Structure formats: C-alpha cells, structure tokens
Length: 465
Image (cartoon, rainbow, N blue to C red; front, side, top):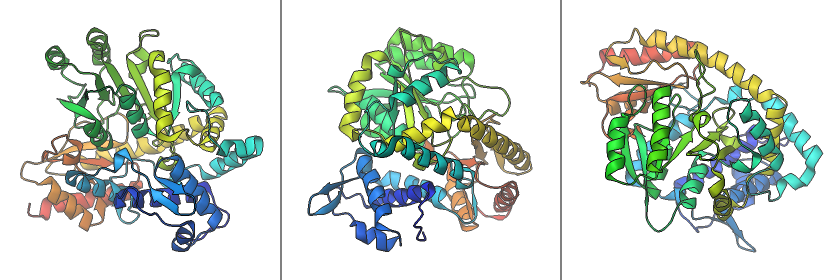
C-alpha cells in the first residue's frame, strides 16, 4: 500500500481488511494490538486515516481500547479456528487477495467494477448533509430513512414489509449470529443445511448449532427425505441459498420452494434465506423465496448482503425478521456492536435512491453474462471433467473431475501455474474428498478465462494424478 493523503473509500477498505485479516490470523484475544503510530509507519499512511480505520475495527468488534494502555484484540466468536478450517481459510484468503495470475476463486466482484467516483461523491454528499452525526452511534436497527427506502425498494420486487421489519447489519455472518443468539435458549438448535454449501456460513453454524445436511439436487432437496427427518427430530432452522447457490449455482424449483415453505408451517421451523445472487440471472428472472412468505405468519428470515453487489469491505447487509422477534434481535445486535456505520448506511441510501444501484447491477449483469457464456463454451472442450449444473445465473460453475483425478493435487498444480480455484471438499460438512472444484468466472477478463481454462486443460491432459 502506498501513502495517500487524499484518502478514497477503496483505500479505507483495503487498510481495514488488511488489519482485520491480521487480527483473525493472530487469533489472540486480549493481546496487545498495534498502536496507531505503528500502523501509520507500517502502511506508510497518515495518522488520521489510521485513527478512522481503528474506529471502524472497534465498532465492528475486532479491537477495544483501554485509556493510557492502547488497543487490544477483542474476543470474537468467529476467532475460534480449528485445524480443519485453516486450509479453507488459506484457500479463500489466496483467492481474495491474489492479484497475480488468473483468479477463479474470488466470489465477489473485482475492485475494477466498484463505482469508486460515484461512491466518493456520495460520501462527500452524506457528510455535507449530515455531518459528524453519521460518525456516532446510530439506531441499532439501522437508519430509519434507509429502512423506509428499502421497504419501498422491496415492494417493487413483491416483498411487502415495513421499516419495522428490517434490520441493518454488517454482513451475512453477523446476521446469522444475531438470528442464532436471538433464538438461543439453553440448548443447541438444529440447523438443516445443503450439502455442499457456503463454507463461511457452514463453519459459523457448526460452532453454534447442531448440523444436519441434505444433498442438494438440481432443483433443491429431496423433500420426501427431509420430511422423514422432520418427523424423527426437531429441526429449528433451514439455511439455504435458493437461487444460484454457492458453490453449485443451483436454483430451487418453484414447486420445491412452495413445498419447503409449507413444511415450515407444518413443522414450525424458520427458513433462513441467504439471497446473494437473485439479481444475477442471465436468462429468466428468479424470485426470492421471501416473495412466497405469508404476511402475518412469516416463516422466512431474509438476508441480503451488499458484498456481492458492491464490495465486501462495504460491510452492509439487511435482514427481514418476523415482528415477534425483532425487539429481541435488536437487543442481541446491541450486545454485539451497538450499531452499524451511519456513514456507510447513508451512502448506501443515496446509492439506491439515486438509481445508481440498479444501473450498477445492470452493468455487472451484462459483463458477467458474457463471461458466463464464455466459460461454459471453453469448458465444453476440456476432457476429464463434467459440468454438474449449467446454471442460468450467479457467479459459479461447479465441476466434477474424473474419478482418477485428485482434487487437492489438481488444486495445487493449478496454483503453481498461477491459476487459483477452490477445491470442492471445503464446501462439505464432513470435508469429504468430492472430486469437485468451484470456478468463479467474474474476476478474470474474457482473455484470462481462455488462458486459465487452457492451463487447466493442459494439467488434466499431461499431469500424473
């Protein structure tokens, strides 16, 4: 990182993410953290910038300060790292930070697509209109003006809620923590999840719940088998991505969405819908499961993150919660971080209100649709693989390697050739050797897609597995 006295939002995000990664990697609650001066020297940046980033880290629960003593690493529920999770974190970290070679592992839009100038203008507009009030503690539930706007925005998508049903959070993982702690009680809850599923959610749920897995078919779960399980034991939650799931790209059929919701009413469980990708359809529009939920008898807890629409460092998401649990959820969130950044919320509000979000998503869809078409075309010529689901949206292609090819060896051979992918075993609760890999096609250019697939093809043809 180079020094930048006129700091833009991407620089703040970069410094914040670097320091956060160091904290998580160190995994040493209550130990002394850097001083502001040390970070200024290490990253060659000014003290005011570092101070603001420290405040962000403190706000998000990564560090705390003691007067006259400095800053310390805060004990955090996500810091518990088992040996089996370390390779997963390394794979993800490499994919997210790798700027050399060809990146098929990054699951968020690349920095180049971030509308930096617009965002910078909206930061200035927010501070000009609202001043320092945005930098203090906010309504724990989220800025009222943003929640009103989101309720109107959701109505256009046939989701009918009020501002009182919406909570702003710092991301999907915080949303999950709030949900699980709100429903806590004295015994562990049981959560049903897809196999395979998103590793970050999987590892968090493993720490806080009993896990029951159900194989994900091309149109959702086998709901006959799922109902048999419901009859045998109490399941409190279902966690799913019903549209363009990570890693498979699978979308649940309309029939199975309706059936799952019917079962939720019959067996009294909540469905946690993680809706990362429903905007990114490349043929036919898909609807969130929440559209089918009944007003007044809701069974879907809806989570929407902006990390896939903008950038992970924006640190904003929202939940739609049943009215009966909102007040308890507010108390739970308050115990975690008091409030979410007012400045970030106000900027997002302007970004949505001024139609920048709709235009941004439209532009991304056009780019990603071309890449999606290109990678499917290229992979069709690669031997020793099977494309398991030619998804019609999302960011990912889920691939089965031939039986005689070891996925871990293939992963490492690709890495040595400058191609980053994710091995399939990290997406399974039992970390099984699945012979599968996940390719994200959103970061590479069209030329890099061609080069990267050609390298993988060469490895598959010429290497001894």
